[in-house]
Amino acid sequence: MTLNPQDIARTVETADWKLRYYEAGSGHPVILLHGSGPGATGWSNFSGNIEALAEHFHVYAVDMPGWGESDAATVDRLDHVEAAIQFMDALDIDKAAFVGNSMGGQTSLRLATEHPERISHLVTMGPPVGMRLPTLFGAGDGPSEGLKVLIETYRDASPENMRRLVEIMVFDKARFATPELCQARSDAALARPEHLRNYVDGMPQGAPLPKWVKPELLPTIQVPTLLIHGRDDRVVSYETSLFLLANIPDSRLVVLNHCGHWAMIEHADEFNRLVTDFVANN
Image (cartoon, rainbow, N blue to C red; front, side, top):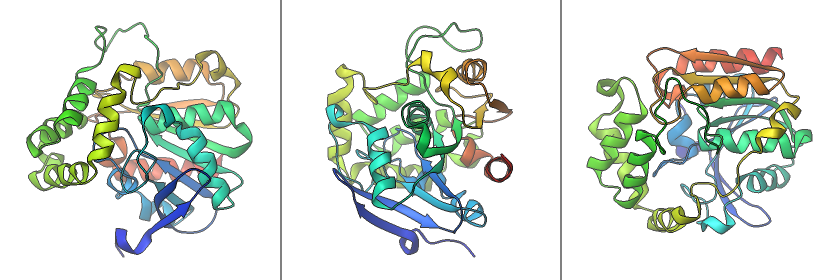
């Protein structure tokens, strides 16, 4: 059976936000956090994962403040860790596994250092860490080519720009950068112009996130940690996950060949097996 997003879409009022999320399954809670691209949502990032993971866990894929059908947020209010804790409190979730792509991975890292009692497992896919790292395999001249295109697409979320963004996010352009997907992502982004405007207005303040994990706190993370990274990621080099592997005590790294920034989309079946086994057996 294939899940329909309308059937599993929910809305919850937290202390500060109205949040859209997608819910399926039962068992141990697993919270999926999307990345920062224009048009990104819990469903667009994880539509190929929710059903498979829901066979084993109680899955929640959240539209974070400033994205999707959730409340708009100016960059000065953009604290996704606090939003995640409020989401858990509103749904009476004491502790959950967090699975985060890119910005969602950064949020999950921060949560693991600031609220260790609320997280049982940490899974990241291509998270930035908010600091300049020595580079051997990635460009070292400022924002990556992927981030540059992402910012351009926030300024103009046309289908053509969205195609450029999707092409740089994935390894297999022919399979994933389809006209239908690019049009759908463009339509989703343009449907919430306030999200686009808030992101662009916040760039001088360091968007997409004003708060980053403190690198010196990474060794304090005690939960089992799975780092998944595409070898061909042109947005965040896999050196970032090597840095995390060296600093998080109970961590392991899987580098996927022929994979860009969206591991959960390009290699959905393998991703679902990795996450299921990791959460179930650690």
